[in-house]
Image (cartoon, rainbow, N blue to C red; front, side, top):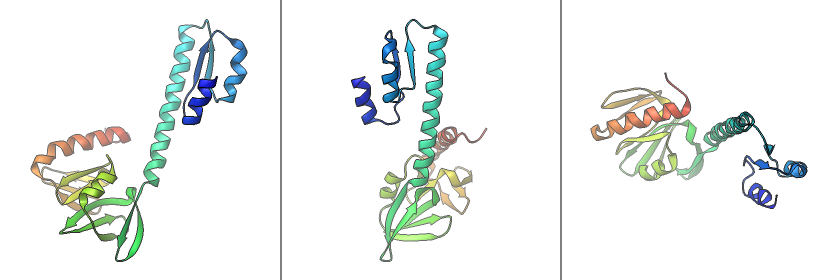
Amino acid sequence: MEAAKELRKKNKKLILIFVTALEECVFQAFDVGAFHYLVKPFSDEKFTSVFQKAAKQYKELEEKDKTVEDHERYLMITSKGIHRKVLMEDIIFAEVFNRKVVIHTKQEEIEYYGKLSDLENKAGEDFFRTHRAYLVHFKYVVKYDASTVWLKKGEALIAKPKYPAFVQSYLQYNRRKGRGL
């Protein structure tokens, strides 16, 4: 129980399953938020059922956290002396001209001095650097070929050496998000 308490302190979302021969500790398991309490002996079916339910709950929590995380992720930039919060999910694509980065969002274009590589590092796996001058958000890809990505608002070039990696990453994105056929 002490170990379970310490684990729970470190991770509130942890799924705890007790497997024991001691029935008398079942009520203490509630205090640490146990998912289940299996008392030996138990059948293989019972074991399988409990772990399948735990795995299902874990997956649901992960998906929920990902959705919340995607909606909350943002970038703070300074544009024309104004500090702005730009939600990552609103970025359709970004491009660079000399030392200025232009972020194309659903609502507007925002220019600021910076490096596209810095934005790329913060953006995460839902974005792809198709060319030295472009960073695209997979969420807004409408179509693509070996040289161009068409987005819901605008288009970006694909450097020929990056095309195979783009296709692979885009397919992984669609699998991760449960999109496509």
